[in-house]
Image (cartoon, rainbow, N blue to C red; front, side, top):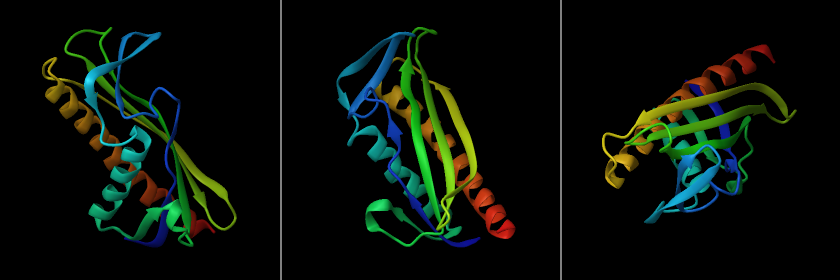
Length: 162
């Protein structure tokens, strides 16, 4: 178990994801949004909250928090929400794609000790919004599980080598 402190920055994302609206792609170049449906918060903020919960629920790290709390951390996890969308141009029901790019930065020297890109694709069971949201949940859950594993292993290796 990790006896160190981790701060998670809010994921950066391009403007199309930095919204409460749910992204759908009808072609590789055309971004649309689901009508009359949205996330509880802007996608990067919502994902950050779920990232923190994933670490807390693992019971494998002493402390984790947002950068706003200004914890004196051992590591900072920087992330980029690269993809967070339902893709229709590869068939119906849509394929949900979640990609999170991560960089683990060791403090106080601000050295990047690892980086990884985590991806999950889940096809919705039907074209209903409930099933599409369930596919987002499953895809994001898979990415977050991998994120916790990767971060804890990479952080421990960095501590042993420093």
